[in-house]
Image 1: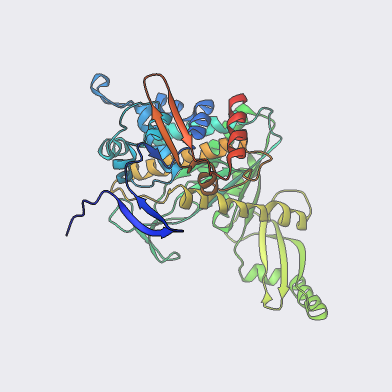
Image 2: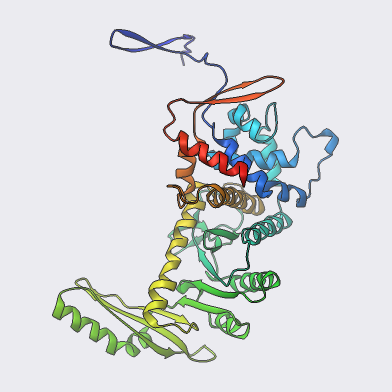
Length: 437
């Protein structure tokens, strides 16, 4: 292939002015806003807490990069939109990222970061989940009266021969089946699982650990377990009843549920025929499968529209009315789908391309740490702004991906951001808010 050594590039002229381009602009970064995320991290103590709890088997005297610097480089890289380790071959020279990780020289190479990931094991996952829980507790200044724990699973497609790889019939491809637990917008659990078993695998154990830990901090808090029909297991429901945990869980329709709800479904169909508009009728029935220990309250949503019947069923032990529980409590779990998208799409939690299991779990948790930083930024500095509920990708594009010139000497580091940045006022407001929080 012919190599071109031309230093100056010419483009079509603009109003008789020649347009030239070259690569002699000096130290310029596209990540001028990364100090904001670094400031949030220092206030939360997130990466520092992880680095203190993780075991580092390296000989410290021979290490050029500390464990804290490696964690920050990897987490900040994900937050900036760099999903692959190979990206750090060039990113390690970015002066803005170096400044954010408290270094004034070259960051770690992809090989060094890869060794960090390959050292990950079960203890690593436990430590990071412990830190995520501590961050969740610290976010509350007053004990909460009610916490709704949202459980949901998603698929992570696989294209290699990773450990724990199985074909999933529903998703029609090889995948992992990670389990996420959120409370509102805050991440509590990011647990990688194989896809060859029950979608509710280990839900009971995780719920039990969370309930016990939450009640140690807030003994009087009401805890609600919420999930779709994939988590409707009678033993989990019985455990909730025995431990004063409320639940509201979808249940897949079957012939018995269809038969028991016939009156309300027919009523909805009749009303739709009379009005020509979609109709919804709510009711409660008592239902118990043959394998269940007893019958439980099931909310029936009998819906009929021009497209036909669309019945839904939800099992619960909450006392409120049927319509309120379905519309205001159960349907609100749909927002968790957006939180999973934040993880999988915006922060690359699905990038599980390592051959070994635990490095893939570690990668998913690194994405979880990046998400926690964005959530901290929203909570601390973006309330009552246009970005109060924005996705990580939108926050990244508006506040982090800003072109800037970096000037560094022995006394000062100056990040001179673009004068044409359209969100300067918002950036200043966020920076001032972080400085006072």
